[in-house]
Image (cartoon, rainbow, N blue to C red; front, side, top):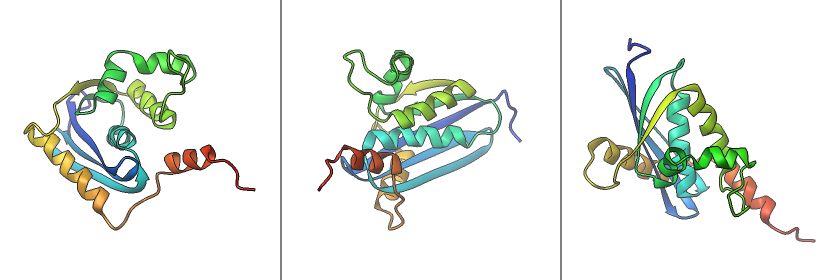
Length: 168
């Protein structure tokens, strides 16, 4: 069993066919000598939501408080966290500096809670550049998006339904 002080390496990626469209996430989690792969497909979502959900799912799978290196090819995630944007958005009730709403606040809230629970270093890696584990996470995400067993991204689908005018 890995030590709670050992660093867990997480490689996460999201994919979307159409944006919005069918999507999926893929995760490669390396915890000591243990390797776990996680993936799930969704019938209607966005690429950024899948990037976020990959990181959330990976961090949720960890027991206790852990030290984590989270590798992502998503600048959306890496810059929002590493440049402190997400803390600013949170302090402004999920609004950007220009007062517009932050996209995906439901997922950002979950991710912030997990970042507070674990000691996470977010590392940006270039996508499709031959990084073995990032490439594997990408293949998992793409395969999940093509899966016949697609889940509902209720956060996305419900937000779209509430943005539609009533038809009466």
